[in-house]
Amino acid sequence: MFELRDRDGFGRLGRLATPHGTVETPALLPVVHPDPGRQGIPPGELFERFGIRMAITSSYLLYRDPALRPRAEELGLHRFLGFPGTLMTDSGAFQQHSEGTVSVSPAEILRFQTRVGSDVATVLDVFGEPADSWQQAEAAVEETLRRAREARELRGVSLLAVPVQGGLHPDLRARSARGGAPFADIQAVGGIVPLLERYRFTELVRVLAAVRPHLAPEKPVHLFGVGHPMLFALGALWGGDLFDSASYHKFALRETLLFPEGSLPLADVQEEICGCALCREVPLVGLSQRSVEERQLHLARHNLDQCLREIARVRQAIRDGTLWELAERRAGGHPALYDALEATEGSGQLFLPVEPYSRRTFRFVSPLSLSRPTLLRWSAGLERYGRDRGPRHRVRGRPLSPEALRAAPPLGPEGPEDPTLWVVPTPLGEVPLELTEIYPVGPSLLRAGPRLELPPPEAPGPGSGGPVDRAEGWTLRHVLGLLEWVWGRSLREQLVRERLRPVHSRATGRLRRVLRDGASLLEVGLDGLPHLTFQGGAFLQPHLPYPSGRVVASQEASAFVAEGRTLFSRHVQEADPGCVPGSPVLVVDASDRLLAVGRAVLAAGEMARWERGAAVRVTAHAPAPGPGGSDTSK
Ligand code: GUN
Ligand code: ZN
Image (cartoon, rainbow, N blue to C red; front, side):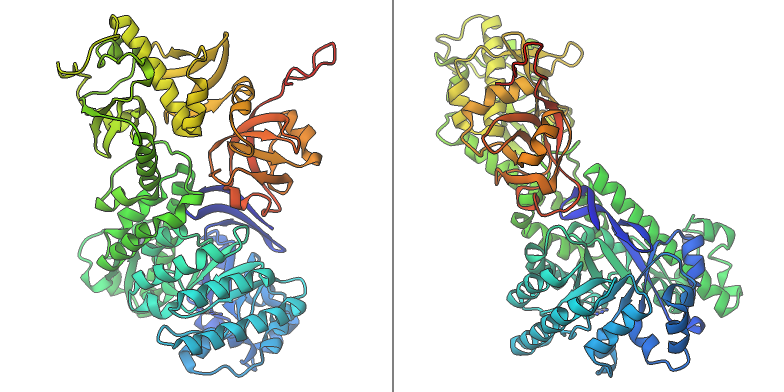
């Protein structure tokens, strides 16, 4: 039902399959009023002109309208609204917030939603207000869970959205998320509209931080009422897959333009600031001459278009691994949003289990960039690397090409294992010379730096050999440093005496691959990190204690994986708990026989939970049995 295609932060590029089509997520679900007289942009236009594939309407407003309800029951929701895509229905909890009460039973409104053919029915939750006491919030959470259990039986063919409540109480938010997961096809974070309306985004982030670790990792997450385009990057970063909102319409009624950078009253617009297709057709500056209806409809279309453009940017950013950058740029739009992102980065530890192994490049956007989770992992890694090593000497410089390394500081009698750390100042702090090609530093951050300079004369010389030896010693140190960085110091210690032969790129001078006895063990990517060959996996395996570096495939999948096919999530039995998306992994069977090597798609804690989709993309597999029938992988 929900399939993961790509990811960044907690953000996911997903596919949600419903009886009325497949929805690419993250997606914005425009709120459609069930009363055609109050709709603004007609639902058919949402589908045809804007390409909207999923929308949301209120089953409660429909249910309680004696003129509309019988028609909806007769025609079914899709024909009634004139929207052929996926329709989600809300339950009336929002009216409890805005009107004080709801006058329908939870079972009745759920049956109504399934009766009219809603693709996603929502449990009638008890709306938790931010000011609710712990006792009030607990009662709302428990009652919502009771209704969710009941709704699971009543849902028919509709998917079920189960709201998460709990007000501003982190423990109750966690309980609500955990307790609702078994009944939910979609988990929907509720009770946040009052925070959104008052720009209390930091509290929103606290809610999301309390909720996210307790949601089922394989289920789509809906954020109720997140509809301002400036919030989509932040919302997606926290794992929002579906956003719903009437903002595009409500802001239009207030004659206000939405942009991902913020909102702007039409009255303040003196220049043609928008180049969207709609505003090219009907220039903003002339809009005041038009009738109110025309003006508001134009603004609603512009606003929706801005929302969709921003959702598209979020999706692109997830593909590119630049979602943090996008969120940081958006945080510049409003101080409250900046604070919220600061609070997000303050919760960076939460992101580490799913934080990608590497990205294309690291780009600074704002002072917040220095708190991204990737830098938490990086500094923890540097700390580990520096342990029991020293003294430290500062050198200035960059490439690790053999030519440059002839000028590198002389190594002591221990050669590559010299405990001295020669560190290079980088925008991300001091980095041991042998690690400077690795993401997030790498050439893009070092490009501006000067070439390697000779070490200070007081650096010791014995055993340092001539310049060629020196380059060899450093090159080996580079390789060992890389292996230690990825698989730990114990692996390095076991491999010190191996005859590892580095190969550098002629064009760039960068380390490209590492050979042993003529066979390539690993290739080094542009991120400075290793991709294992099958021989490399077979070589490393005995040096890595089980289940370190491994993902264990089920018996059923083993033969397929050994032929180079993808390892699917449902066939994972166990995984190294340190495995994150993008980690290089050995795929083994239950008896630890190496089947293939590849890159993890999911984090360890997510594997086996997704019913569909890949857990490991296999990049090399066991050689086919030779003519004699012997398996060369053994
Ligand atoms: N719409 C906005 N907020 C909420 C909420 O908390 N629950 C439901 N069901 N709908 C909402
Ligand atoms: Zn526009």
